[in-house]
Length: 118
Image (tube, rainbow, N blue to C red; front, side, top):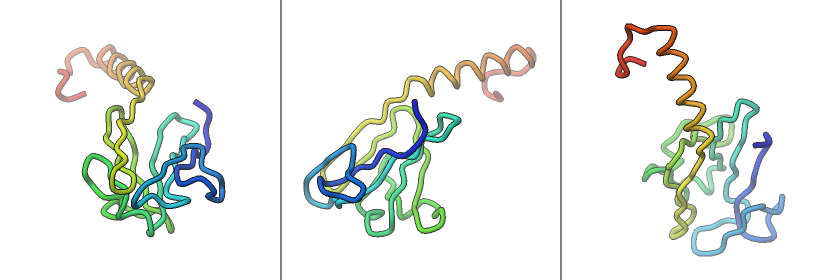
C-alpha cells in the first residue's frame, strides 16, 4: 500500500476527497487515512469533525491530539462511523499477516514463552 493520505469528505473539498460521502454530519474535508511507510494506518481529523467521527464507538475527540489533529490507529475489523450514518468496517488483511509473522518470529526465538505473553 502506498504511503500518504487518502482524504474522506463531501465532493468539492480541498483537497478533493478520494472517498466521497454525503449525508448529515459529513464535512467537505471530514477526515483522512494516513498511511505510514511501515504500513500502519491512522484515521485523522480536525476538531470540527472529531465529534462526528467514531472508531469502535469512541469519538475521535476522545483520542489523543497530534498537533491540531485528532488521530487514532486503525486495526483490522475496526468499525468507523463518519457523520451520523455512514458506517464502515476497516479491513486490512495485510496487517493480520504482518502480526502473524511477528508472533511466529517471537515464538521461534522464545520457545518457552506461551501465546498469552507474546
